[in-house]
Image (cartoon, rainbow, N blue to C red):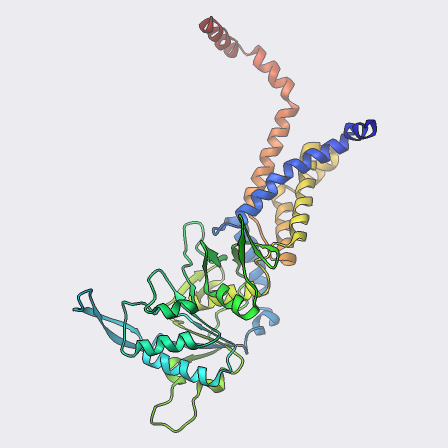
Length: 400
């Protein structure tokens, strides 16, 4: 017992123990903020630096070059008559031609040589076309396909077995698609639906945590943009180019181009969003989220948490010790040290945190340590200050 007491009387043991305790809420706060859908400036800056350097590397440029077939439905439209609840005409609207969509999917189903199909075309009840029920049954019967599901209900209940949410939103805090919330309130997004079907892995909730094969995961994934929008780089075709006339004896064009590829069917002209790397079609943002899931960027590595905690403990120790070594290290400043750490964790574990908010916490800790060291001077000042003495006398008189 005396040996244990002697150990805790050691100055360095006490300092390390106090530092370890203080670093815990900083670590939990870091994980909590990184698990939010919004992104603060420090986190975004780190990603922009790294992505702008690496996006044009040969490895990144060619990784998915021969794996994608992009089919643009922007110009393949038809005029659809809209009806109200009483089946009365209430106007018209231009929508994607479902008949052409059916013929494309039918050719793909017959060939069955594609890797996966992402159908980023909204199939809601308001825009009904003739023969839609046949299209919906075809989609429901296909394998390796996911359909976009927005805020409006889908046109047929059979589509929900193939539906993934695309309700990503931009806010004042998150408008550059740095992060992608792949699961929200139990709703699985298109990237997660695709990831689970192709890999056989499942993200499940265990109490307050999300887990995958026993590992902790975050509900957001950082978009590393493995596919950068470049019209000349990828095989992009118009929907009309992929369809042969019914009277033609020529073999179908689409199966010869879809062999082993991810077939992305969507609008590549009007469905454009701003990202921190420039403009990009919505369907490619979803595919990039899938790429990030495949690379395991949503997983919380225990080594990442351990290394982060160790550095936080050391920074707290240097802050409260205030030795010559500590002053030398602190000369670089918290932003530089935490920024370098954030860049390192991103390169090694594809995880980031907001440097600014953590820096402010350490500056606050530094001020509290300074106040604690000057506590005798502050106490003396309070005792000698005439205004405080006058207020104290008044309070004592009032209480009597």
